[in-house]
Image 1: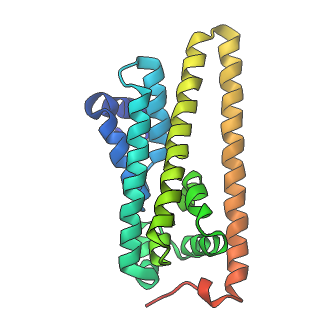
Image 2: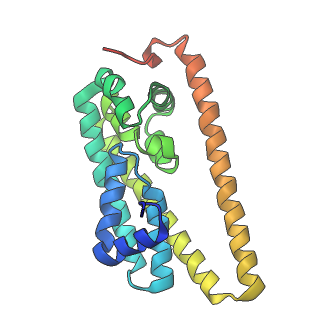
Length: 220
């Protein structure tokens, strides 16, 4: 059975729906749904480099637009529901008490910049807009950091993946294999780095919650 993660299925989605599938999936993930937006964005860029059936400019525009729209909708949802309802219904959408605590801790500690940096960390990317709205972050500040983060995340990932795909195609033999191996090692290193930092931040948040009433997960 085809899954959303299979390469053949992704290629069929690009061929059928073009840039729309990228924009919609990025938007839904930014609203808090557990979807592989980052993988889709990178795969879309590689699809451009290898098939030329899509333009990288369109992928970047779709990704940035989906990110900004999704985060703003997530902000409105968080603003309307508040922390108590997020604590009650969040686990149904992957926002576990630990993730809620982590997001609130990082958000209250660093403010606006976490909206920008959260775009690059999977566990925060899905929920930072909800937390910004629930914590009543001023919308104009949220919009600035949100748009900046969406531009660098979608634009940077898509462009780098596109250039990587283009270079591998131009190379041949052992050079292509070596180039690809180095790229894989760098990507895996980045993933391990972010994963370890997520774990460290979660532990910090749990310790801080023992002394800061603002960080205690709210239950109805």
